[in-house]
Each structure stands twice: as structure tokens, then as C-alpha cells.
Length: 338
Image (cartoon, rainbow, N blue to C red; front, side, top):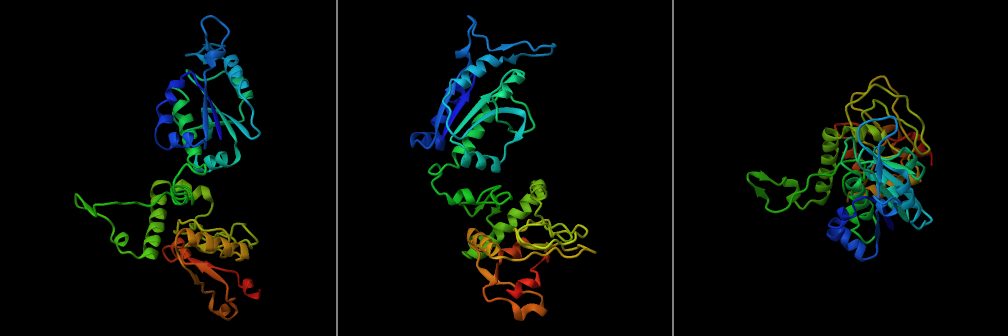
């Protein structure tokens, strides 16, 4: 993957690109970084890259012509994005990093400065991206963050690819607490379950900690996913399921995997949202179970349908963790007809 950084301060990137995993990725040709200074494309004797804004105002704007000339000097690879780092852009998150890492061969990043760039620069841009709701002196720090996030997702950058699957935001949740030696430090002890050697109990504890941390620190992640079990009777449309009527809000604020309806603990006067468990749903269950190192267990349908439960109809015991605090998971009886 090729990165072209359009910046007035190329020296800013020298140290970060010469250390850690970024340095190793560049050395292994996993990625390459090209730094371009718009000042090198000016035509006046003062090499001026900024000017006063029309209509008045405080500060200076970056002129469009040096930026256009800098970007147009670059080769064009088939799958290319030209990104302007700006507080007005799309918030940078893990899903966006994964999209860029998987879909791009070339990423051109324009770093603004002063009061920003002439708005005509947007004609060059395919995306505007923001690091967050704050303002920095320039776009170099956001550009470095984006570049770091994309490069670490490239095959070969991180030693153990499994570590990329078990971290914050990968499952729509924050990461679980982690500890190393010593087992006790200044009176703070490592949770006993992590010392038990019981891998299933450890996986269960970690998942519950993810739920708890996300609920306490980033409840927006649960709400934004549209998958939390806090609805009295979920039943949103997914893969081949029937649609349940929504009840009042319940208390189980946990996300649920696709293909399974979860009823909130205190939902009232709502028809339960239930979904058909199809073959692709079972495959998803198996995959989730493998990621969390949990065994699959036969799931109990309502008693009137026990006799019709197919032998191969299994659900991950992860659902027990996913439906914390006595929430329930149900499958439509019509699955038993297969």
C-alpha cells in the first residue's frame, strides 16, 4: 500500500516512521510512504503557500494552486483515496480504518494548516476525515494516526493476526481488562478467574467485562450498533427472520448476534422479537464461539417444541453471556419444521 502525504512539515514524520511497527512495515515493503511538500510547487520567489481569506477574517488559508500541483504530481494507482484531514470530516473509527485497509492501494492525505485550506481543494478530495471534535495546529498528527491504523491492519505488520480480532471495537465492544505479573501489586490483585486455568470461565469473564466496560464508558457503541438487548422486544429485520413488535425498553443493554432475538428483562406489552435460525446463522454462531473459545451447547426451545428440535440445532453458550441478567433468547418454532 502506498501513502502520499501532502504536508508543509515533512520532517514531522521522520521519527514516527523510523521506529516500532511502522518502521518494520516499511522495511518489509508492506507499505511505502512518500512525503510531498506543497511549497516545492510554488511559482513565486517567496514560495508562498498561504494568503488572506476573501471577505476578511482572522488567520490565513492555504492556497489551492500549490496543493493541486502537489497532488497532480503523484502517480495514480487503481484503487486510490484522496483524504483531507479536517475537523469537519467523517469521524475516524476502526470500521473506517478496516475499509481503507481492505479497499485501497494508494491513500493520498492532505494536511491542512493555519485556518484551513481554500475550499476549492475539496475538488481533489474523495473523503474528509476527522480525528475528533477538537482542533490541532495542523493535519500531520491526524494523518499519522490514520496511516498507523491502516498499516497495522495490513498482513504481516502485526506478528499475531489473532490479536487484531480480539481488541477494542472489533466486536462493537471495548476490550476487556488485562493483567500481567506480579499477581498482586500495591494491594491490587489480579482477578482469581484469570489464575484459575479454566479457559471457558476466563472467556466468559472477559466477554462480560467487555459488555460492562462498553456500557459504562461508551454506551453509544451499544446504541449505534442497533443490536442491544435493551429493547423490550427486539425483532429488527435481519437475515430471513420475522419481525417482532417492539415492547417498552428493558434493562439488558447487551448487543446480540445477528439472527437471534433477545428479549429485555423488563420489556412489557410487546410481542417478542424472534428470528429464524438459518444455516448461515449457525455458521456465524460457530465462528463467534471459536473466537471466544467457547463450546457450543444444545439450546432449549419452549417445552412444547422440544421434541422437534433438530439434532444439529446448536447455539453458542456465548448467548448466555450475551443475554446477561436473565434475558432470554428464543427461536421461532418454525425452525423445527425443517
